[in-house]
Image 1 (tube, rainbow, N blue to C red):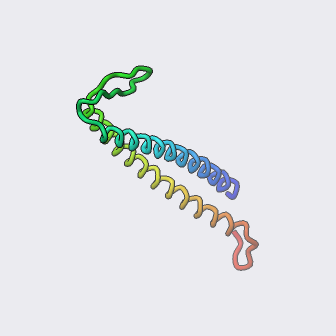
Image 2 (cartoon, rainbow, N blue to C red):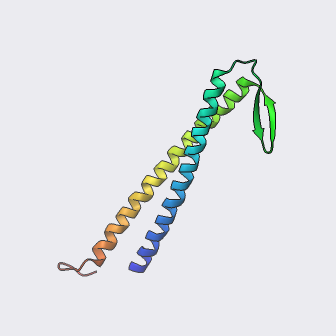
Image 3 (spheres, rainbow, N blue to C red):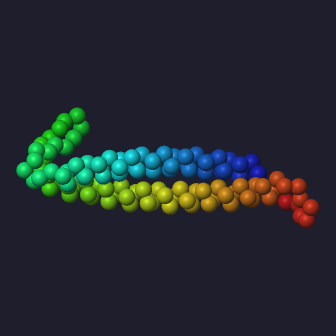
Length: 113
């Protein structure tokens, strides 16, 4: 039983690390999106703008790019929120499991498990 809980704790730690890494990557992408939006906001509609598509840069319309980036920012925000909740739930499960393990490993005076 203790071995199973230790294994589960290790799985939760790995999950937490993966979620935190993914969240961090999305936060970086959101920051880059914010910077791109800020630059586009400074431009006029007749400015030449390009977007990266694979290894190509394609000329695009400023308003179209503004719309795409705002949608991307919203999607990233949603995904970051979801990952934050998953991170919190995983931390809580880890805490509960650690407490159970400590209880089982603690020398028992009242009861034996």
